[in-house]
Image 1 (cartoon, one colour):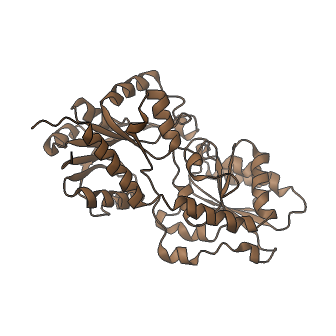
Image 2 (image 1 turned 90 degrees about the vertical axis):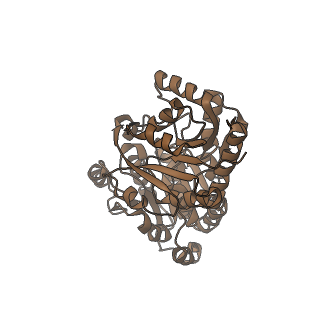
Image 3 (image 1 turned 30 degrees about the horizontal axis):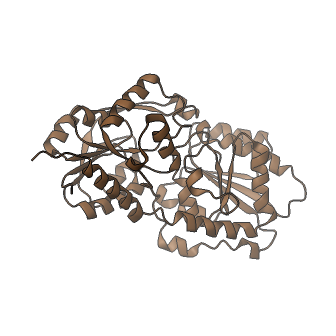
Length: 389
């Protein structure tokens, strides 16, 4: 049965979501509405609030975030959304189906109001390893009311099936993609570094918050080991994009390790300005200790970069083909990461070969295909709803 009123409870979204939301709106029509939260502290999100053509209602509210363990890479942040008007907004829209992010406060509100649910879920067994029993209990209850789940990749699907007993037919995989690179940047990308002089350094790039969770300290440790190697056929450099509470400490650590001349800290880069940095780089590295489905990985892959990805990144299973477009590693094994980086220094032909494969793998993660997944989940949920005349 076709749904004519679908409401998406999406507390925070950035510009990478806009193209997918527009695709969904194009296919559902004016019955599709996004409800989102105005957060004063998040400037990029404030810009994204007004992008796209899909209908939306921007509500005021106060998010309470508890993320000490999250920043340390030991668990997910706890986020409580204080939006007292949400029940009244939902009842005014009277949606036949509600899509909501994770098991959030807004999801719980919709469940308590007895709206049929499709839940968008990103967590994995690893990122949810420290979940509190009371949270798990609430999730079990909400799962019983959920008609379908949307997930980014296989590890999230596996978690729902094994942790909450969700049937595989109820889970739809592939609902996320990064923002596509600008066409003018794509045409400028040339990964043919093997044809260049051996004196040209191989450029590795890290992009992420400079906090413990993202593992930049482990990257520096690996670089220090790599720097001690003799007889490398060419030089190398490390470009670090991002900012965070550990930035000064990491700069100091680079000096202690004797690699300050190898590492360039560029600070925070606006999302629409990051592409030239990818274009100028050769290999992407992310030694994260805790990540659901980091979008910097498909971003780098779309720019034809090989990827060295931590096993704790939720998209490692989906996006990395070992030895074809990169490698998966344990971030605390600094010697192994140094070995993998050395592969690209010793054989630069791998940069072009693995980069092309990255672009092939990530090409199926685009706004149209992500919207297809949403529509499949919505259609499946509709088939499980008993509508009252």
